[in-house]
Amino acid sequence: MSKNGKYFFVYCVSSFLLRVAFLILCKTMASLNHSTVTMFILEGLTDQPGLQVFLFILFLGIYVVTVVGNLGMILLIAIGPQLKSPMYYFLSNLSFVDLCYSSAITPKLLVNFIEDKNIISYMGCMTQLFFFCFFIVSECFMLTAMAYDRYVAICNPLLYNVIMSPRVCSFLATGVYSMGSVTTLVHASCMVRLSFCGPNIIKHYFCDIVPILKLSCSSTYLNELLLVVIGISNVFSTAIAIFISYAFILSSILSIQSAEGRSKAFSTCSSHLAAVAIFYGTIIFMYLKPPSSSNMTQEKVASVFYTTVIPMLNPLIYSLRNKDVKDVLKKIMRCTMHNRSM
Figure (spheres, rainbow, N blue to C red):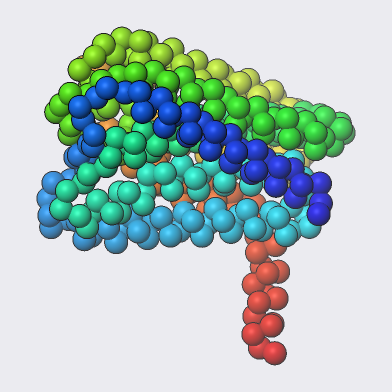
């Protein structure tokens, strides 16, 4: 097994065990909760019966593309000999995160389209919230790690393989999942201490933090404070780190004399820039706006975008704009067609 493959296997196993441990902890704390509410009713995307079948088909198609695209990206990077650089190591991690946090939301959404009542148990709701928080925070820090990788590649190309060694890449990936775990543990610990006495209708299509807090019959001051402090610190710290990285990258690109060299350097960053702009634009619109401007319809549309659409778009963005990925895909397709013709 290659070094890249070993690190990929290690981070998958370690992150899986970490999530299982945190889930057990979450269940243990939930058993101490004294809420009279044992289940919630999700309001869903729409209350118009005529749209349910159409939306089911639409989101099923999106989810299939998401699963195929992200699994395909992970497999291409695993088997492609020219896709063994740190950039593709982080890209495989990003695909893993996208696949998982979409899978935490979309399957339940699809079930709700064909059921009369969108019921979810208390434990199911907390579990969905747990995984959603873990992967959405991990996405923020993974995009930051990818920005640092691009900074080193363009600003220090001669030292790239030394600085971005397999050990450093593994350390960065572990740090990403650790930040996701710590943030999730804090939110989960504070969430399960709340009491829910009724009503139990969540005005959303999944168990997000803010709609759940609105249903609590106990004080949510600490939860709201942590949501603001942790949310702003995570979003702005990662956004600032990405901005600083690209400020240095832009300066280095502009100093390149040849137009071809500038174009090649920029092409290695354009896909990541597009992914960052889409993700952070949606997150900022969703969470960092005044409460007075809150509109549930707009929030649902924004939530759909970052829970289902972005995980589908990321592999398309990186594959369509990346020559190495397209070359590996073409080789696999040629080999497949050749084997079928024999």
